[in-house]
Figure (cartoon, rainbow, N blue to C red):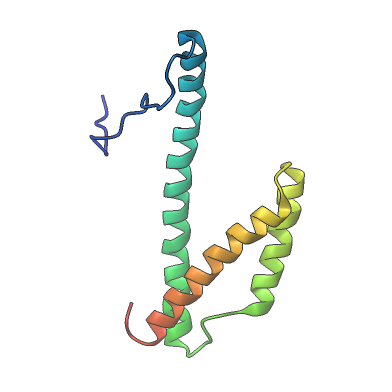
Length: 116
């Protein structure tokens, strides 16, 4: 049996009232899947940032710039293609990756400045 890492989290919490209990059960089941996906995303992002941290250290060690615009453009184009194949809005995917890239660059700059 695993313990809940967030003991105050209630997966059955809802602000919906006077809804057919059968519908609520379906909602809970779908939300359970969403919660699992969210957890996986958090762990995947953590792994991604561990890898980009290593890149930042390597760049700082060799005085490379924190940003790599050509790489970033290629990654965004690649992710947009993947999004289209996955039936996900490519512009949303690009915004999401841009947000991550901005954070990575900020981390790389901090490493280069000696303030990780």
